Image 1 (cartoon, rainbow, N blue to C red):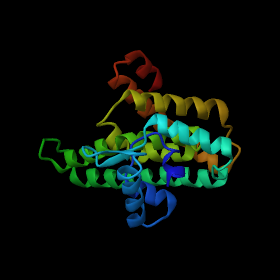
Image 2: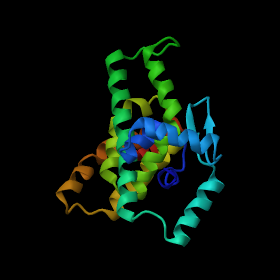
Image 3: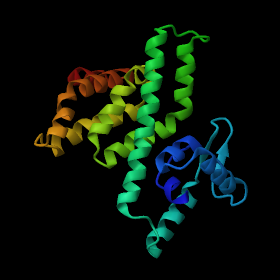
Image 4: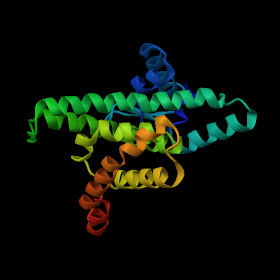
Length: 214
């Protein structure tokens, strides 16, 4: 389990790691509890109901694994990372579906607000999944994450999202020619990306940049 959680620099819960590793949830819950209570290698934040590996421990574990040659093969790590992204893609799609079904009501008792609060609980791992999609150059997954959560992101604008969309635009424009049929779909969605970038820039007070993005 340490091999997997050290790959992700964010808070996480058992369900996320269970999906990434394709291991039963009960097994992961037991492993994480042991790492927290007995080994003291990860912390638990009750306010988020999630675990987190301290940066110093994470960096030490990664360096030890690299120096000893005991790290898992790149294909296996890539599989875990992709499934980490896919977990959040499914999570955001489900949240979006619930919000669209509920309507636009946004008072303190609104079911919509409850979904947004759930998103806030998962925000750190969602952002890690989005950043990871760029690091792996999986721009198709990056756009799918964006489209799957657009109704949420517009209710939760942030500097992270502004930076994410700016990097996505830069990567797609400068590094990815449309020669692969699977990648052409990414280019076809760039109007959506530009619109989302402009919206985030506007909400962050970058009005001139927002005008150029529209």
